[in-house]
Length: 454
Image (tube, rainbow, N blue to C red; front, side, top):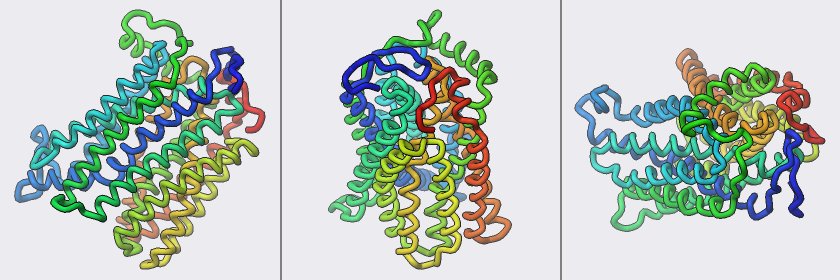
């Protein structure tokens, strides 16, 4: 990457049109735009809201019947999330294959982003007993979100060379936490104030809609600033959708040529599953084991969002000095420390929980941002979107492992403390697996130039 506009040499030594600061800032803003969907909709508001709509439609046994299938009303959101994850496993790599075969990647980003945002806004119609409409709209929104992320990630190697990628990825991730946290703070303020004439359910519904509007509005910035570049993978042979399916098949067969890239994906799958489970189960642990008020949990969620901004930026700086690989390994040690501290955390002590949340926020953003940039070094040139599609589903396909282990540990011991400490295994095994990857050799094997500091 060159600030003066001279040609940028990519990983594979290919000279291409350079990126500009204006373009990179535009790229950052898609993190700002889409993070509102995940924080406001997925993490906080939609689960309880969709559950209440389903409950209103439930029979005397608490069951609803989407497509004739008996489902407990309280489990509808969880099943919908699981179905959307299953669909993403098939859809996202295909989206990546299509993105690599077209020179109109920016327009592809627009299509998926606006479909997802429109479906999110459409959730305003999820009222009364329309639980099935709500579930279908969420399926569309989550698929649009995942597909747009694949295309968005594939811009990263075009915007930054090997030595700048950690910084660019970290800034993007940090901006995303800031944007998602800001809208969530505004919506939670509305919940606290409870405007006259509005119930909490109505506030939740309009908060969900606000995330769709935010997503669509801020997506215009990257669409204006990003530039399309020629497809390195070459033009599609026949209809782009059909050729995308063919190319996906070739990519999956060719993965065997890059065993070290696969080994990194396996390591990432393991430790990221631990991260996602900690995030998902933190509120359960705070409620059931620590006996903390929901207001404490909400305040901690907000604090983690904003501290993750600082954490992503700070760990990006560490990566420039010590290398992304070593910094991620150090962060996994810190994650182990977070779980050990959670295990001994005293009950009914909100400040102790908040302090632990501070540590989690600092380490959270950096681990994910640097994993993204490090993986981008392991992708064969011209196949970025395809591999990022596989990257996105590499954890989603097994995202049930962490919660399953957590649930089994609690079921057999009756202790949430044992359940939370059981997750240490994901970070220990992930650390060992990542440390075993000869990273410089893996980058060269993918046909790329290793950064100076790794």
